[in-house]
Length: 427
Image 1: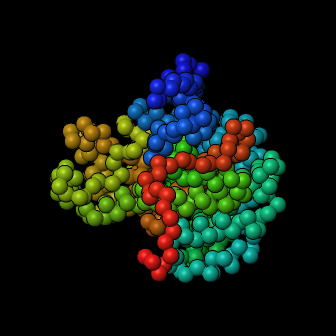
Image 2 (image 1 turned 60 degrees about the vertical axis):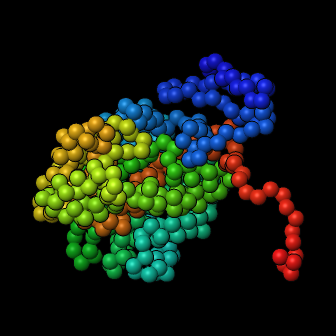
């Protein structure tokens, strides 16, 4: 607790406590502002407002720092696994070997989905966007697993958390298989979380599917790097939905719907589409010149970040993973060649360096996912799969927070003042 912030509004002084977290900016506690002054704050996008107290993820965009429970993201991505990071986000500490084995086993045993759920997919057109399917099917989980929808029961919350983390990869894989006209592939309990997902997505029942360890490692890193990102739009949506007492399956479906927006989850798809527009490395100078031209609407996607004003710490990890995957798969793709050339130019060009427009996580993840074989309409689905553990951890934290109230933002009203109704025949 720091000094009080003093406010004088219309000659009426008031004071508000300044609260300090463990790291990061102080916050002014304005919960009594309206009672003291009759005024609200105006903060479109809530970019200057702390809506909750959280101990899960910390970001310092100016310094390029991302910590999960205090652990730097690059250390977790290079040395840990997605299952271990999931345990960390949910429980606050890294697991022992026994705890990790038990947690992984629990998740594995929940990967099957109710057989009747498969009928939901057949109600969608074959060309339906996979995110449309994800919104519908994940929201419908509460109709199948109503034994874990009582948010006041800690055991039911735990079971729902495990079910969501386990079943969303299965649902995501089913959405892909459905779109290409192949039958659904059941999970295998002897595979890792990520290996299982790759097999369920790409396996053909007519032949054996071998999980490539380099592809599996890159995919696991992508999942880790997207697992949580503080109070972003979709996480805030999950918390807001949860604040009403909605069941966890509905809350995660709400998060998926928010993530679908191109300004949030669609950035890596936009980056890859840009690379396809450029086409070949020899056309890069033309497009860089266009990006520098203020009168040209063209923008380089996948460079810079709204939060990170320096290098995106997640991008460093994926840059190496992209090289490993492309070398292993031996992809001869001009789009991927363009990505590599554009990366090298942007890292040296004074225009990009001065403006700190470094390649971000979306630039590399799009390249990797495309090389692995995912169509662009699956990119946001994969983001949702990875982010589910973050959403679940944030939802659990919110439910357990005694200060939590139903979300109710205020507004600056600019509409008509009071006026009397005029009958239709007199207008």
